[in-house]
Amino acid sequence: MMILFVVGVLALLLVACTPSDPTANLPEGDPIRGERLFSQTINTAPACSTCHMIDGDATLGPVLTGYRERAATHGVSVEEYTYISIIRPGSYIVPGYANSMYSQYDIRLSEQQIADLIAYMLQF
Image 1 (cartoon, rainbow, N blue to C red):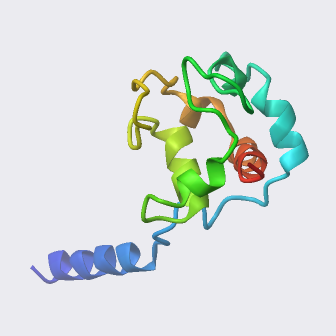
Image 2: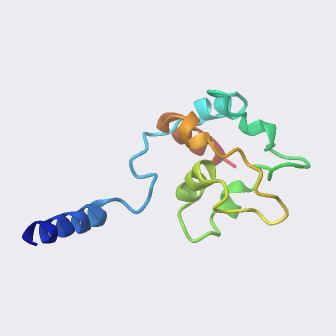
Image 3: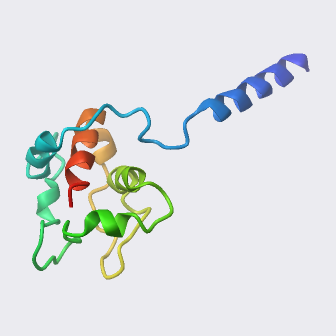
């Protein structure tokens, strides 16, 4: 019985010490590398530019122009919103767009690549 209590306490401590922001442990992102990654197929994952444009008329995914301002309206940091949108694309669906984003970026991209993409996107 005592072992279960100790295991329970340790589990609670682990949860309490885990950062709530999933971007807290990402490496520093490089927007220049992120710009290149945005237009590349990576480990069979489609390029972001397949669906997202910098500006203009988007048909598959929202444009990047004004991204930072739109991302800031979701109750989490812009970095966290972007991270979640990349690794769990169904979490936030922009009105007027379907949940059609590729869903395996979390296993196809490294943490560095995700950080670089975030750094790039936050310029808009």
